[in-house]
Image (tube, rainbow, N blue to C red; front, side, top):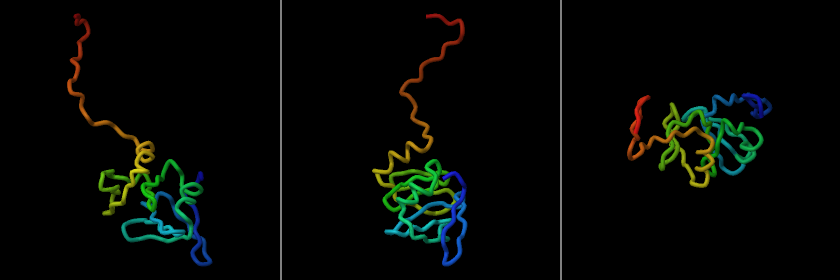
Length: 127
């Protein structure tokens, strides 16, 4: 999908969803809730697996558990306790089977320091 939005059916109307407004998705069977903040959401009748493959851009969304997917740009903290999102007070479960895919899709810097930092030599130093 190359556009930044798609439409969903609401009764007889078609309504636009802008991808940048989605924080996370929560599925229950064939239904998925699109959350736009902690409390505001819409429900569509489409399995999460179908949305992840056919509708949501892989570079913007990642599945983190059997029933949850998030917009990568909304992730604030990834911890053992779950995934915390920027700007809203929500902790989503993180399944081990989805962790490796999540880590591949984000930029991770290693913050551990080496045991010994080698001494930098100035130009002209010799052994």
